[in-house]
Structures are given as C-alpha cells and as structure tokens.
Image (tube, rainbow, N blue to C red):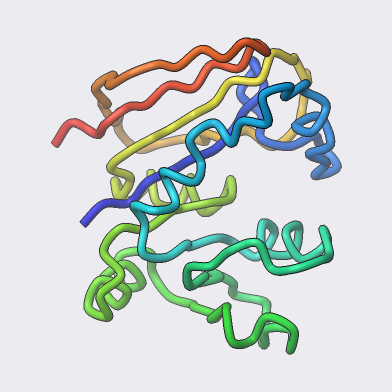
Length: 177
C-alpha cells in the first residue's frame, strides 16, 4: 500500500495563486510535449483521492473527464457529484485513516493524493509514503502552500531528481518509516 503525491509548486512552495489560479503552470514552454513522467506515475496507482477544491478546479476545465482511474472526493460540504461524472467519481467523508482503510479494503492500495488541503491532512496523519514534487521556475509570492503545520517532523529519503530542458526540476522522496 502506498499513498503518493505528484504535484507541481512554484519555487516558493505554492500550488496555486491566492485566488486559486493555476494558469502559471501552463506558461512553461514544453517543446518536447513531455508529460514529465505523469503517465508512468498514473499506471502505478489504483485510484485518486482529492479534495473538493481540486475536484471543482478540474471540473472547471470543461471537456472530457481527465482521469481513467476511480476518483474519490473528500468533502464535508458537497452533497452530490454532478451527473456528468457521477459514474467516475465518488464522494467520501470521514477521518483520513478511516477513508484510507476503506479504500484499501476495496482493493485500492496505491493512492494518488491530490489537492493542498487533502495532502496536508494526509501528512498530519503521517499517511504519505511518496512525494514527487516538480518545481516550476517562478516565484508567486503568495498563494496556497503545498505544506502546512505538522505536530512532528516527517523525514523523507531522497530518491531521484530529473531536470528538464525548460527549467522544471522533479524530485522524488520516499517516507522514512
């Protein structure tokens, strides 16, 4: 069982601007049309767990739903999933540990954890096994941070780094247990 984060941040550690914008992610030239290892990562996971804000952001893109794997949305306020994705997305509520146990019992053992608050909640419960963070060469100065306060330090071991021609730097860390 493994809970993984695959996310991009600004150099100063933000995943979105203070108004929730992520347009700055699309401004990086990508002449090789690389997916930066995303497809390979997605092949290793069973399902995605994301928060309501991330879910609503993905919905706002329009078009076809981008995920082929099951998606579980954590929310205390959302009461139903929109009709257009109801067969692809399930709504969950409860403690993070309870949710992970339920998903693992259903055979979803390798989870992709996405969304700032959701990632922070999993880290607070020490339930992140792998961090794959791509640094984008921009300073936002303010916004939604990837990391928040923790009750104790969490140690990770460096695994590898990939540097791309356009200045992106992807680094992988594995949780010390």
